[in-house]
Length: 80
Image 1 (cartoon, helix red, strand yellow):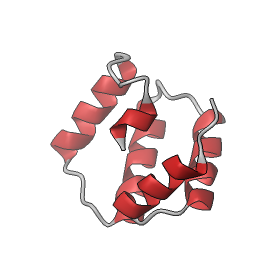
Image 2: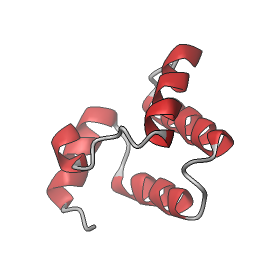
Image 3: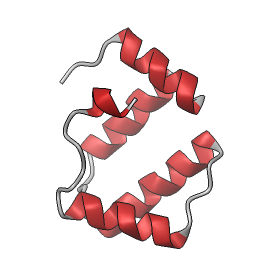
Image 4: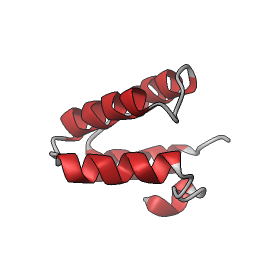
């Protein structure tokens, strides 16, 4: 799945995270098991630090459960 520069510009505007950082994180995700709770916690914490938006333990648990149970929207472009 390829993303347009427009997509990255919208994400950067909303999150203050640049395209290179996003691609680096995406590569890390591809190289790890997304159904692994420790991997997901690590990614969530990195995203929280990058965006400066704190994620509570309750929110983290909800995100992890959604990912593990395949309840994440498939159309990422609509999220931004």
